[in-house]
Amino acid sequence: MLASLLLPLAAAARPTQPFAAAAVFPLWWSRQRVETAVADLAMTARPGRLPAVINVTGGATLHHQLREAGAWILLDPRLVTCAS
Image 1: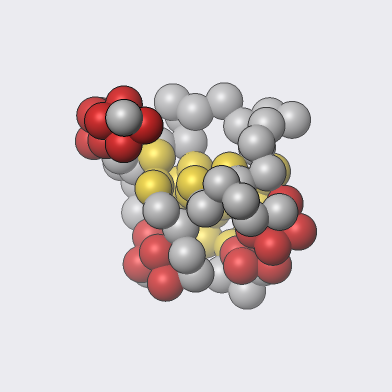
Image 2: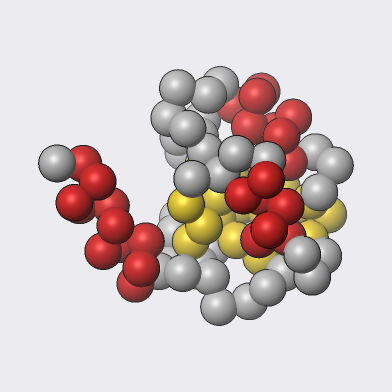
């Protein structure tokens, strides 16, 4: 049920810039685990309202690196309010 709600959102809100994304990690991950996962790949990282969401900017391969680090979904950071 949850997947049927999230998949259309993810498809509509895909990142349009290769250097920035709002990354959604597994929902059971702590904020510290998410920040540790992106520490080496992001030039800047801002935590989201949920511990599993983080706005990141980085290099040209950021999206690939975020997926390798465990991100489930990458969204356009302009469409996701991640301010805490």
